[in-house]
Amino acid sequence: MSSGKRLGFTLIELLVVIAIIAVLIGLLVPAVQKVREAANRMSCSNNLKQVATAMHNHHDSRNALPGGVGKFGCCWGTWVVPVLPFMEQESLFKMYTNWGGNDATGIRYNAAPNITVSSTRYKNLTCPSDIPNSPSGGIQNHNYVVNFGNTTMFQADVTVGTTVIRFGGAPFVAYAGSTSDDGPVNAAGATGWTREYGRPVRLTDITDGTSNTLMVAELNQGQGLDARGFVWWGGAAGFTTLFGPNASDADILTGAWCNAANPLNAPCSTTSTAPPSPFSRRQGARSRHTGGVNAAMCDGSVRFFQNSIATTTWQALGTSAGGEAVSFN
Image (cartoon, rainbow, N blue to C red; front, side, top):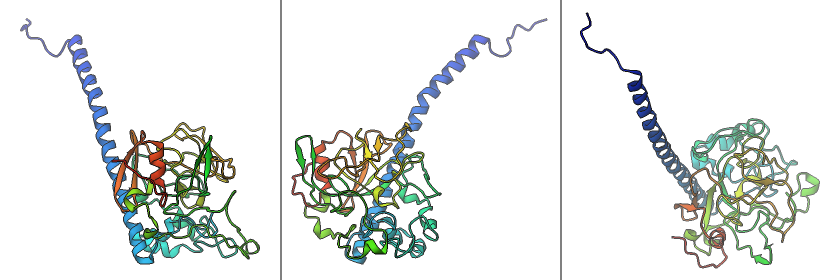
């Protein structure tokens, strides 16, 4: 005979339990993702603090910030190399050869032993919110680049519409004086070369004040065959503040790879025009954080800048001697 007691759950009861669990998961997952992103953003901020500290230690040791690029630009190392010993990477720094040279004086970043340095993934140069990428030959993209000023990497005045934007100096020198590309790459071209890309800058040269001048900011690593974050090459080593954080304006990567077809990448082009056109070599600060980017100031502090920051304010923060009155608190 039946005892009258029911064993287990009815189908309706099981469906109700499953529905409740699904609702709870739906509520929990976004919360977990939000907490994870907050942790990633904090980790990214800490990375920038380490980079800024390394820059200051380099300044204390060498009496100047490192050059943004080498004397001849392009392919023989950027600011990353001289700060390596100040990021606990002394052995890799000693391994790198021909920093600031040209093809007549030695190898590039992609030849042995330099490729060991450039193919290393550096944790404190990598934002955990982004997707690590190695676009060519095992050489790594990274997430932090130095401030090349408020116009383009040619560091000259530009005209946007009818508005002339005066170049106001920068804490890192890129291709100042150029109208097209890099300097000579061989002995014949280097003879008589008087221009000096990447000239080191002292903190005392930053007359706008170190707390009002950007030093290092985030950008997203280009996905696929894309040079954004390819910081061993001069044209990808810095950002400019011509347009604001995470803007829809195209990055211009002259002589490099651009993969605009990938939906993870911002707009880009490889076609550059000479100043005063604003469509010269440039790349903007970008991140995968919600609402803005992290950046380190020249005084070593780190701030989060909203995408909504006024373009004029962002441009003023990009200058080292522009004389603008800046308020961004």
